[in-house]
Length: 208
Image (cartoon, rainbow, N blue to C red; front, side):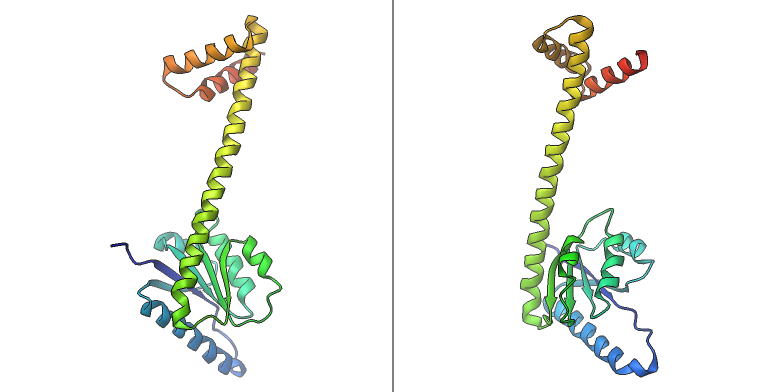
C-alpha cells in the first residue's frame, strides 16, 4: 500500500490589528476547513507553517511530498517564501485562495505552482486537485530531467570534440583515430570518455 501523501500547509501571518479580527477569523476558518478536507481525504498533514524566513529550514527538516499555500491577498508574499524554500529541492506546490485577482497567475506558474485554485476548498474537490498537481509535477520534472540530459550530452560532445582536435593537431591523427584513441584510454582506465577528454584539455591548457 502506498504511503499517505505528506503535506505541509503554508498559511499567512495572522498577526493583524483588532480592526481586522473578522478577516482573521475567516482565514482561520478557511485554513481549518482545508486541513479537515485533507484529513478526510486521508492525507497526512505533517505541519501548518507560517510563510516566514524560517520556512526553508522547516521544509528541509519535514521533507513533505507536497506543499499547499493557503492564502488570499497575501498569496504573492507567501509564494515568494515557498519558492525560496524549495529552490534547492523542488516540490509540487498547490495554491488555494479566495482572491479573485488572478493577474499574478502566470508568475505563480512560473514559480512552480502546479495548481492555482480559486474557491476550491470543497472536500470532494481536494483529492482530484492534488492528484492532478502531483501528476503535472512529475511530468514537468521528467521533462526537466530530459532537458538536462540533452544539455549534458551536448556539453560532453563538445568536450570530446575539443579533445579530438588536440590529438589531431598534436599527433597528426585523423578524426576517427583521435576518437578511437580517446575511447581506448577511457576503457583502459575504466572511466567515461568525457573524463579522459577533459583531462586532456586540462593538460593541454597547463602545458600551453
